[in-house]
Image (cartoon, rainbow, N blue to C red; front, side):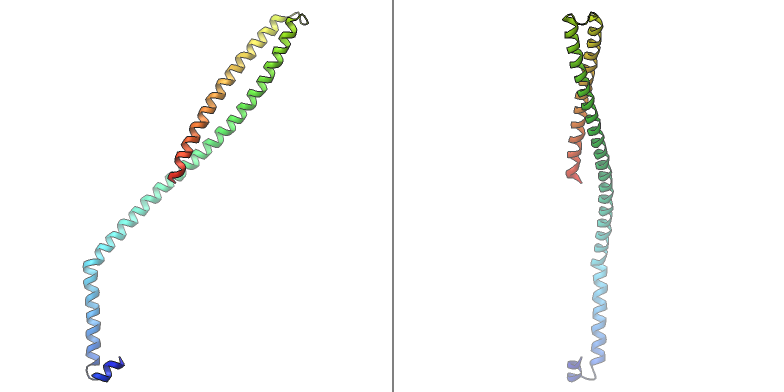
Length: 151
């Protein structure tokens, strides 16, 4: 401002008024031509952000559900393995008792054979359940691994 007062002290207020007017006019033209496009871009990006947040929420929910299912399958699998081990021990013990009965120690061998056949059926059932549980566990684990990179 001091430079303006040195060259033209009488013109200084008019020059400042013209500069302010030019600035206001430039701002209005910018707002008219560019401002609306920027505002529409801001609205569009805000909508995209909301959509992405909704998808993220859904994916996090799905991932939490998959984690729960995987943990439940792991627990069920561990229980099934324990039951399988118990039945296997009982089956072997019954087999040994059957062998002892067949060798003449136990006169009621038919009772042991029935019990052994029944335990064999139980063992087969448990083995099938264990295989099914393992397949389910592997499937849920694969689903979990597939969901993990998308979040």
